[in-house]
Length: 368
Image (tube, rainbow, N blue to C red; front, top):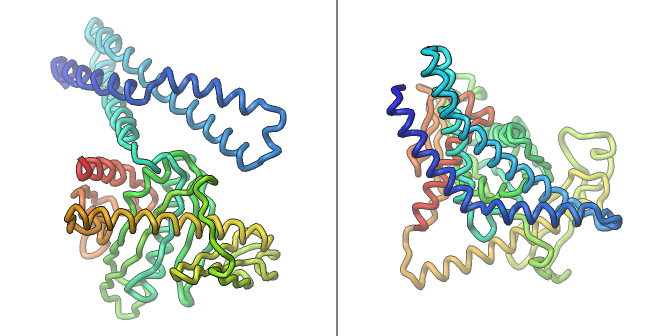
């Protein structure tokens, strides 16, 4: 790139980075680190394991965010020096290295800028995600399992903890449904744009005539609730079933009636948990998931009432949100943002950052 182009891009990045630093409020984040470090060093911290995990997780996240911004600032401040040295020495290789660093900085700052758009009431929460096979028979069940792997790989790439609470396996292949928690700050705000119906078009591996098949899977994303938000659920409103876990698992998981299914009778909401050996642990986890789902249901009802009062008839943007075509051509396209790529293998291996970032920006524009 020309020296003038490099200067213009650096000027634009300088403005963006300064804006990010202002929005994130680094002085306040450093004060939060001091407070969290004091809490983390308390001798009785681990007497309450849930609170201890919240404190240590929050501390790790805030420290990481501050380091991330500070490292970007240092790298950005070094950029003009790299260009100056390359120019003084007339070294084409050094100039190419400076251009490469500028491109890398652009990507890193763009990604960080998206984080500043996560300012919703629940955006900073962890996420509970449920994937369900929809229309398409065995192909839909296989597609649901492919999506579970895609999100698992996405979380691995970001060093986010993922815990599967329940998996209902289909008879021939794939899964009927799966519920899992993504235990990372801002997981809900980030992944909530994935909610909706995901459509797959491919040559069915289950069709002996090799015909093209279209199948669908639904993704539901809700925030993990705080203890103070817990919904009181009368015992009379619950049906509790215990059963033996199915599918892959350890000996203890598959040979005892430790799995728990809770049905909220008034609404018909059903949740299950089978990832723990203890029936009590599974019931506690299932109850937390049920409370989160009921709270989200209440939020959606309140939102629908407000939309009705405002005359909002645009409907939900979540349905039919992304199409994955593997035949007769290769293409993944988001139907809301128009973001697309021909590298379907990378997307299915968890490289969905571009789609998520575009979705977050799109959502912000819709609410403006």
